Amino acid sequence: MRRLAKQQEDEGAEIDLTPMLDVVFIMLIFFIVVASFIKEAGIEVSRPDSAKSDPSDATSILVNIRSDNQIWMENRRVDARAVRANIQRLLANDPEQAVTIKVEKGAKAGAVVDVADAAREAGAGAVNWASEGK
Image (tube, rainbow, N blue to C red):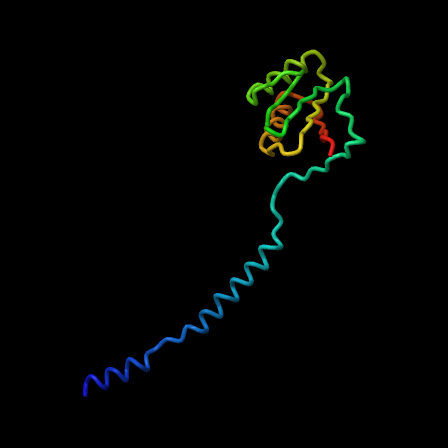
């Protein structure tokens, strides 16, 4: 008799998970929709057209960043740690020079930001950007 009563109690004690699953799915849909409206932080850069850009200005220091992240200044390869010192050396001759950073397609953003930061830390008054042809 006890077993029969206990079985009847167990059968009536089931928990319905359907409402909880409904809430979970509604929350999932909500977060997916909200995530599509979140704007990611970043640097907005408007690249000039190749026909309009002229990085060969005689009064600017040209820094080339190749697609394999090699940094070139004055027709020689420069280590990323030495960019600041090289720019300071060149600015000592003419402090009014601007620094032009020419970036090839495929270069990593980290290398570009490091070079731009080094130029600003070296005391460059203006940092210009040049794009590689398509």
